[in-house]
Each structure stands twice: as structure tokens, then as C-alpha cells.
Length: 437
Ligand code: 5CA
Image 1 (cartoon, rainbow, N blue to C red):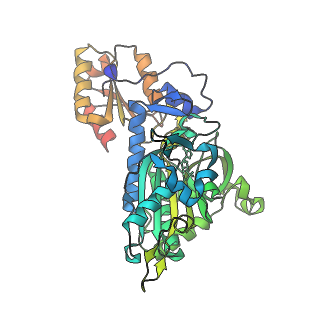
Image 2: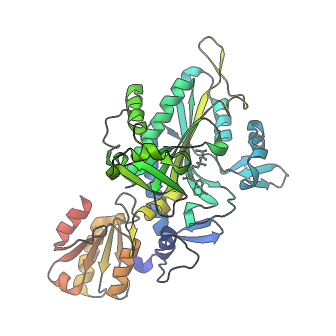
Image 3: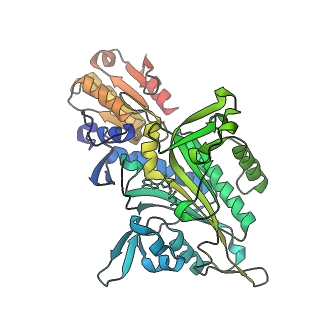
């Protein structure tokens, strides 16, 4: 994209309404704008980051064997009456009436709808296990929406739902999602730690939250640094192999991790001091096993091996996709702005033309832009170099290629790595080779 004709409304001033770094930076870097309390419009830079996060989530769900569907945002109240949650859910649910006075709601989650689809479409236990997911907007009428997209009212969630014939199968599905989550978060440059959790309104008796450290997090968390050292993406755990998943689960649960509610001070301090990590944490994912809590009341029943009815055991698995944009920025920023991990940056490279109109600068930046394509943002605005440096740091491109009249005349560019501040004067070709490697 050319910044001269791009809709990236950056702000010099810190917006007064933003209390935390990620919210301030998302407004200042022109990622989002609030349209009503807790409801945001995603502008080009924000949407590009959101789409990259969504794509990593999708690839890892697919790799774990989950199937993508897309359920609507609007749901009939009737389904929620069948599960008994319509009245129980309370004022967080946005309830709507259509012109025929039928009761609808804007979905805060989809357990009921997926159970309904499954009971219409699956007949035999032989078709199990299955896991269906979608990436869809949710609405929860939070009392105090705050911290920008971190606690919104409208937010994007990946929610997956597993169906198994029994508890043992459900445990395999649960562990499969847990492994997929570790890989998903690692690919985004996050160290997300799984912690045992209460299951709240989703229900069920086995549940983990995935927590990322950030000073503004909502709970205090404690864990073993060992979690940060493991390469989950490269680990030789195979999906579909119950022994591998058992080994994985043992590795996970052998290390200390707890939120303040479940914290055991003695156990934590038994760890060597260098291994103790603690701080505030934000929840970026939450998974639940809840057995037949929805399948039983909603009459989801399949024919078993001898024709006897089998009520599937279910689990649900959420990732806060839009929250992750804020969470990643919380975990990766400095005084000057965002420091995007390469995998989720809206643009991998910012090309800074310090003097548009200068023939050598124009020629060199246009050639780089043509080669880098959609992953580059070309700053070709008629503006001061200082403003371009500040905006590039604010927007957080992992790489900056800086071209001024002097370097262009010498056939060179300056290559800057945002995360380290490291700069090098190199040829345009070697700059390209570095950023594309
Ligand atoms: N049905 C289950 C799992 S699919 C469920 O709804 N789980 S949840 O309530 O824990 O939400 C899943 C994830 O969505 C959370 O871990 C969090 O990352 C994200 N999330 C929840 N509420 C909000 C909110 N108000 N704003 C932004 N993200 C949210």
C-alpha cells in the first residue's frame, strides 16, 4: 500500500480515553476506531493484523483436524431455551425481536447452535470424533467494556466444538486442542501459559485458560519458566496419536502454572528462583470439557454399536482473535510504538522514501516496492523525514528500508530492524534478501 493514498490515520497525541499501552497504540497507529462503547471499526492496518492472526489460528485448527464452518451471528432464542441457558445467561446477552416478534439474540457463543446442527446432520457413533470450528463475531454486553479490543462488546472469536463417543475420546480431543493452542500462540510470538481454570457459565469440569503476561492483565499469575523454553511447533507430538498427546499433556502439567485463585505459594517457591515467573496475565484462550451438558438436554443422541443410544461428550475451545491484536501489542511494544512479530505484522516492511520527487529516491523505492508487493507499505508522503521515522516506529513494521537522496545516489539503503534498533547500510538487493529470508 502507498501511504500517500492509504487510510492510516495516525495520531501524534495520546488519546485521553485509552488507559493501556495497546489501546493507545492501536488508536495512535490507526488500527481501529471506536464507533460505540466496546465496538470498533477495523481500519486497513488493524484489519491486516487481525487477518494474519486469524489465518494462523485457522491453519493450526485445520492441522489438528478441526473442520471450518461459519455459523450466523444471530441465533433463535428457542435453541437457548432447549439448553436452559436463555434465562440463565443474564444481561450480557443482547436480546432482539424481529418484525414478527420472534425472539432472537446476537450470539455470545455457539454451543447450542452447533449441537443443533450436529443432531440434524450426524446419525451414528461411527462418524465420531469430529471437531467443528468457526471464526465469527460475538456480542457480550459487558458492563464495563475497556482496554480497547481487549474487553470489547463486539469481538472476534475462534470457537471450536468437539464431539466424542465417551470421556476417553473427549480427553484426546481436549489435548489435541491444547497442543494446537500452544503452536498457535508460539507462531504469533507469544508465550501463552495454560492454567487450570474454573469453567464459569460454559460449565463442565475440565478447563484451562491460556494466559499471556502483560502489566495490565486482569489476574495475577505464577508459572515455571520452563514453559517459555519449549518449542511446541517443532516438538514431535503427532495429532491423532493418543500416546503422543498423553506425553504432551504430562509435559504441560508437570510444570507449575496457576492464577492467583489456585496459587500454591509453597509449591511455587520450591522452584529455583531463576525459574519463577509471575506477573499480571491476560486470557487469550479458554478451553472446556463439559461432557453431555448440552447434548443431553438438547436430545443429541447417536446410534451406538448395538443400536443403543450414545450421547456425545463435548468440549468447546475459544481463542480471542480480536483480543490477540491488543495482547500481542501489550507483549511487544516500546516508547516509540508497536513492535510487530514478523508473522502478524500488517506489513512486514516499511519503505521510507525520505524525499519524494527526488529521481533516485523515487526509482529505488518504487523498485523495492514492486519486488516486495503486498507485504510492503511505501511511505511516499510529502512529509518531513522525522515524521516518517516516527510513524514507521509507531506502526511497528518488523523491517524498515530507508532511502534518502544521499544513500540513493550511492546505490545504498539503510535497513533497520524494529525489534533491536539495529541498522545497516546495504545494497537494495541485500536488504531484500534479508527481509525475505
Ligand atoms: N464457548 C467458549 C469457548 S468456545 C467461550 O465462549 N469461552 S470464553 O468465554 O472463555 O471466550 C473465549 C475467548 O474469547 C476468551 O479466552 C477471550 O480471549 C475472548 N473474549 C471473551 N470475552 C471477550 C471480550 N469481551 N472482548 C474480547 N475478547 C473476549
